[in-house]
Image (cartoon, rainbow, N blue to C red; front, top):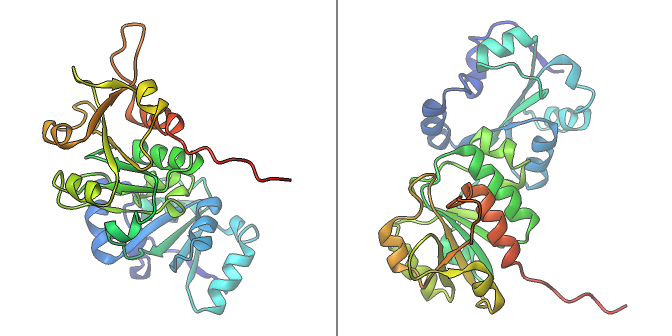
Length: 275
């Protein structure tokens, strides 16, 4: 049976404390080897990806919608906590209108070489600090057929709750890992057979149309942090610099929008199967 909670200070709920405290969660979640999945759809995608739950927390009314998940959890001895909205809000710091949370065991990240073996389209997120942008980029990557995503050491955590939510759980289906050190990792990408392209404004850049007209077989596209863009050392290390031509006096797009444009232009189009 689900465990009814009445006290937001219950020590069994430690995984869910202060979910809106970004600094706290950014430090504590990786250290404790967990992440938080929010909403029925995201939880189901995490489970489908083979991630292991530590516990579940939900309002009473969601027990029916997640009956199969709850049943499997109880069969495995995984606790399912149920509480009133006010108790959950005092615990987590926000009103749980998406119904359910799950504390998930964070999977071990693969090494870069193993992750991108055979990959033709790779994204590198350099120091992108906004979790919403990271989640939006992953959603586009999933929809536009990107094979893998690499994130630099100072990039926001793709498994942070907001990133996961904005991505609609696609962070679980797009293979990713951290590339460290950076930007020295550019050399590794080149050694692994990828042409490294920096999406940036520079005098010697080529337009995305020009680059996409005859793209290399394997491309790693680097996207830079909000505001400052890609670092000068990274641009210098890349094989080519690519820009998206703009109009209306606008110099650039938001990084998530720019990533979608670049991914669509460089997508690998496969021939239809013979009938």
